[in-house]
Length: 449
Image 1 (tube, rainbow, N blue to C red):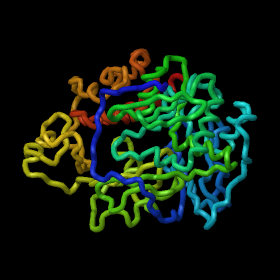
Image 2: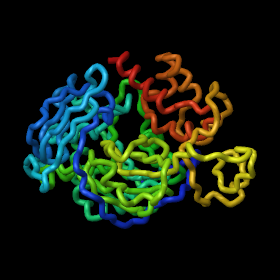
Image 3: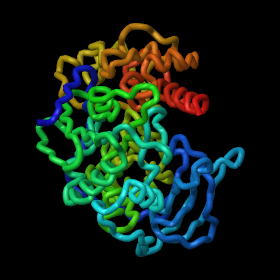
Image 4: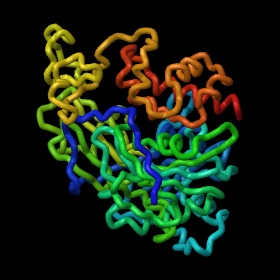
């Protein structure tokens, strides 16, 4: 019988623009790109040159400190640019695709006959390793470590999130192969979180059923409620979409970065799933699918809580399988502002009358901050939406002060910025909490290494 996690603290934000489980036709992306900023904990070293011909799976970049970690082209074609910013920081490596993708061959392999070292080498050579992240620090996993356990959450609980059951349909064999590969890379267990009552059964792993409001689907909840991370321990996490990519490496012998991307949001005219390749342009996903005549929009690579603001000429970030389009709100002016009855406004604290319409009412929420920045208020508002066995306000203060001892005692090693997204949403102080956590993890990593 599967373990069951019941999350009580949290918040489901019901937004207009939910997608149905249907496939949409996307446009072909005219260029693809690797964005080094997608990957925390690496120092990029570009190995490709402009004008070079590459295949899908050809190395474009490595980690300077760990050259065995490779970043490969998602498509075949020609490297057209290596874009750099201040101090020659690598911003992107751009590839113009061929009409037909040609793949580097890594050979089909029987996982049962491979050693853990051979599996690790195969994943590294195919450039898929960067999809594996580690706790502590929420960075690309170190190849020198053997994780205590590996965690995969197939529960998507964020606003307008995709349905993993639809994503994995007809890809069950690849997902199982990915899990089999991961199970050989740890002396412990591979824990897979699934929706309660889904009936999902996977071999070589331990199934954990999860129910409750967001952030129930966050992998940190799975870790915290099953086997928390103590100082000196290392665990790995990986998105289920990327488990499928690992599985394809062994079942097909190629690095195929194709994934289903869900297009959602109140400002879209079509909503559903689009078959795309990591690093494609946002334009190829949203062109012709945004409401006509609409301006002042915010396009987000990811969900509204943790995603990044992008333009049509930007790219889908490496770990994302969702694009959301909502109003920007910079051209909205309200008579009396917050003092109006607000029957169509979302409120956590029942400030507006909209709470009388029930928890299932859907809202159109724009990107405005709705208030000024001020000092952190110790009012337990974070605790109401933060289900981990951690004191969020005290941990944030320790991060701001960079008090390493307190950070360790308060649980810094098992969290990621996404775990504080709801705290940021309900925060009356309008503090950039996720940025504080990310900066704190980066500083701690540099200090401890």
